[in-house]
Length: 93
Image (tube, rainbow, N blue to C red):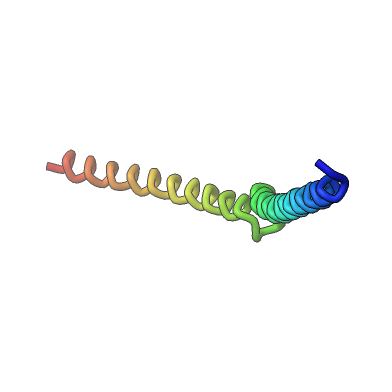
């Protein structure tokens, strides 16, 4: 192989190396962009797991649990009254 051929080969190899580095750089940038977007999404979801004064999912769950407890207590009270009412009528006969 003579000098012009070696020069052409080196130039071609340099071009290939530059193209590979460019592809790697684009892949790294894309990965970082996707990961930053993913991190933001995870942080947004994570923030819903803590109380913040009323607007998080945690606050909503707490309100639902409190209402459910109140409803369960009312159902027990009504059930007891109904049982007493039925007993009253059964004993009356």
